[in-house]
Length: 353
Image (spheres, rainbow, N blue to C red):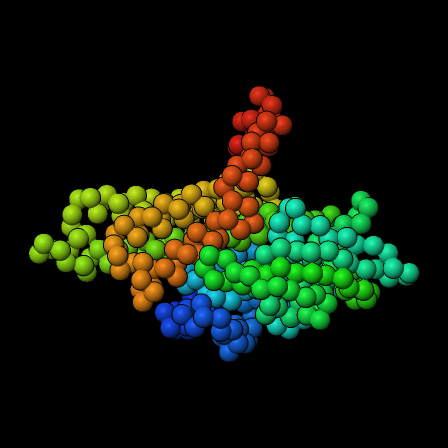
């Protein structure tokens, strides 16, 4: 890791540890927008971590920049860090100006339809987008849309969409958007390398894999700490063989999620290779399910209470594994890739991934 990347990572981790305490998470769950924390993150430059230096970013290695998403997942940061990083990356690559403030992306669902059409010498965008992350606080919405055989990146201002508020299982904003907007020349540009809606969801799946890995690691820490301090029948429950076995399984799941997330980050840096990212999203989703179940078994009833911090992590594990495609969706992608490779192409497909 380069020295600037190391400094940025350590600074960001200290910031998350200091700011995103149980109290901050409770306030965010109650609907409070943590504006001061977001402003501080912008001062650190975190939302621009994936933006090249010549476009105003840090210019750090993409794999190291993506590692910040895993750290954010480890502290279940209730801010649109991954979404803004992704939006900023798309704008920079398309040559569009980067606005201040939080951003988000759409469409995140394969079934969503957004129609880009000519309107005189300009463009018009119309349609609906479902369960868009953090749309109610976003100052800018970045979309991937198509017209004919061409793909475009579109940048909308906050006054160019309306919304109906929604939330995921963790209480994070996931809003329904209605769009009918005329676009200025500064709001639309050809997508780099034909980047479209499928690629957006693939990149989103990679980011969610990293967040899942980070949160799974923290769930392991919480369960291990609780088992070491909770005394039953005269000794810590972590001394009982059944609990030790459960924690060992949880540790294995966390290790698998970390490895899968690393693969996803490298696949993004290598040009958005689909198979490794699909496998990572499947494996991190599976790990999340096992980790949440074991952690609640170890904690017992207290882990289900609002007062305990565990639910902030497990509810996000359950929510994030469903976003940008769940295990079933990405397993089908893997199946299609394997089937299309044929018998002679299977081994090269695996080794290339």
